Image (cartoon, rainbow, N blue to C red):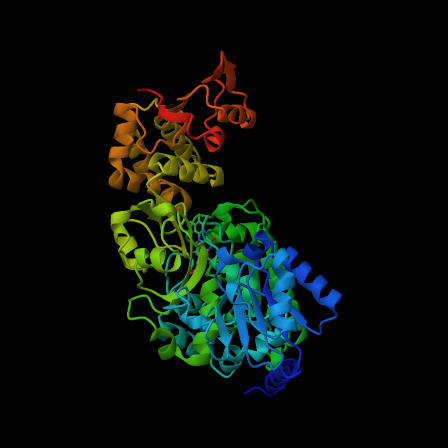
Length: 620
Ligand SMILES: Cc1cc2nc3c(=O)[nH]c(=O)nc-3n(C[C@H](O)[C@H](O)[C@H](O)COP(=O)(O)O)c2cc1C
């Protein structure tokens, strides 16, 4: 063990132990982006105010996410004795007073909001957190510290084994590190699954210097936020992963590329880099080893194609964010045209675990071809939107039922999108597929970086296609006509079908576009029509019904429906007229009528007067 590191880590553990034995209870509120969106900052302010007003001697800290995103703000409370910690959920400012009275003043519990006991024995009223249905089956390795440590404190990270993997790697030859990575079977987590060890070996064998590392934290897929959870919850894991990659590849500088829509992740990564530098874990002569490596946190402008590795490199280089033609690949000519390795956040984050615990331990968790654990986020038609870390191989349906809490309102599942807007959609009949790479590849799509979006029977597949193709059109870099015009034409056709103007020839035209767009310069254009391709294969009748019968079975497409008043004298219609944003509901004799030309199908009126207003097929 490196002596300097041993001293740094021992100091961190001493400070942690001193805090535990101080006799002060500790309240740690999750303050990640999901918690902020659900009022976490107001709860934190209320906690601080109430603690000060009551003169309580309590340590208040913040953490990253446990993954219970739909139940934020979550709060853990460590007892004064330091031996017992309980996690609570949904702590709103108005409940802070009674909460503090129960858990601090009376040193008791607040079972109503309890999720489980993190540390210490279960009680009659609160079970162990690990037995909570949401935690069962999860194998938390990457997320081991998420929710537990203060992401802004390197001491917290060090006291929980941060940088131990890096220190192990310091004593190894680059080739041995790569051998270990290959032995583990770690595949890239950004969607492609390419073996990380092989990529590192390309850079190790590069002939030019200096060479660079890039961490792809662009995470542009709508519905994916696994990288954010890690950056906001345990940023040092990523710094450490990049340090290990640097040792293996002789890289001297690294960039963490984060889109600007992730301000908290940017802040936490910057702080982690600053603290690591301060402790001698980044910069020159790291821990006295003579090795040099430093990190820059780079803010992207939020363009989706800048998640594509060569677009990302262009963006850091200061050019317009457009993917480059490959070859040359980044390992030959990347940043500043010098050898560069690009990996996803989660890929780098696995390296410390492999170095610390060994390849056999790391890969033993899964008997699937894909090794290790994978983080998934789930959203859309789910009761519980959150993030889990599980071994590869659980079925999509189990993910939905066990962790997502099923589809709201008992509406049947219609399908799901596994890998972001370029990946495509599958019907509910394919929900028994295991969450791993091969089955999706066989279907001409990919598992992607971990965001799974579910949709139910109320969703129109044509609408989904229009949305995803529209997204691809907006995000096309504009370099090749095939992509930017191809997506535009596809959106035009889809909009036409969705508004009742579809033609018999439209499906063939979409088929032609799918064939043509394969010839786009980069994967963005090549995969943009996958949603339509799979939708035409799996949900073709929905397109045909719209075109031939001019009828939308889901009655969700604004262009295919009209609103009609079924009970003109219903008193609730006055309220409906008041909320109508376009004044489409007008007085008509003793009652009310709808002016169809003014109606924008926003459905606000039916929320107020559901019994008096109905939806009908517009072309019936
Ligand atoms: C349009 C497009 C967007 C992408 N966005 C991301 C992204 O946000 N994050 C990511 O890690 N990879 C993204 N990728 C994949 C990257 O190009 C690259 O394969 C990945 O960063 C490699 O890391 P890995 O080997 O660790 O998976 C995207 C690819 C395309 C074509």
